[in-house]
Image 1 (cartoon, rainbow, N blue to C red):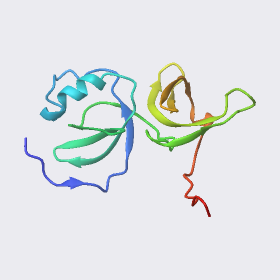
Image 2: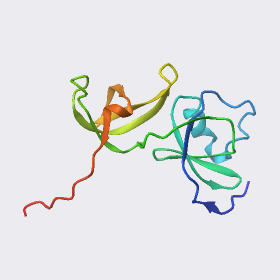
Image 3: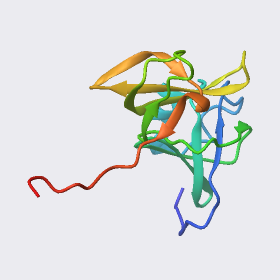
Image 4: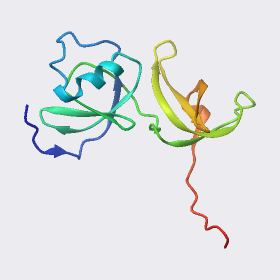
Length: 146
C-alpha cells in the first residue's frame, strides 16, 4: 500500500480502542500490526493527528501507528500529552505534591474521565491522577554559576 503526502494541518483528536475492530488487521498499515496488537484494545488515549493517505496517524508518546479511519471512542482533550512535565497539586492534602512526567493517559469508563499515570524519578507511580490534580511545569532555563 503506497503512502502519499503527509497532511499536517489536521486538528488533533483524542480517542481509544476498547475493542479490536472486526475486520482483522486490514485497518492497520502492515508495518504497524505487531505494535498495534500490543497496544489495542486498551484504554490508552491516542492522539490522532495528520494523514499518510489512506491512513490517519495515531500517536501514543513515541509510538506512531498508521490506521484506516475506524470506529474509535473519541474523548475531549484536557491539554495534557504523554511526556509533559507536570506538578501534582495538593488539593487540600488529597495528594502528595511532587513533579513528574506523564507516562500513561488512559480512559476510565467508570468515572468517564481521563486518568494520568506519572513517571517520577524513573519510576511509574501507582496512583493515577485527573486533570484537576495536575498543572503544567514550565521548564526553566537558568544559567548555572551566574
